[in-house]
Image: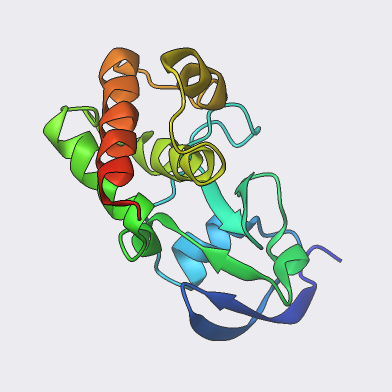
Length: 162
């Protein structure tokens, strides 16, 4: 029974994907091992750290807590796709400029979570940013720079908004 597989079809970063996968494989493992998208990381494997964040049908989710078979028919975006959006590109640039990426392990989850926040609230306060990112752990303790980076991206996006 542990060797059971299922076929799925989904869209990952605007690319149609069909695959036969183990029924117990997590979404983040499928993305990393099956598709070669290694930007999302497996940190705790218990849904605590946020390093495994991916976007499924427009919502940031913890890829370690979702089975890949549950993504059948879904639209999935990863950190590799983030730079194709204005919010993602602004966040990536701001993280670099504010040195908010230290070791980089948490960065993909932080950027995806921050992008979801900025899409819903284009001008969040520092407290709102901290609350939105509270489910993402940074072991390098770079939170101050991360909050600065999200504010910088927010300001830049507000400058270019119509």
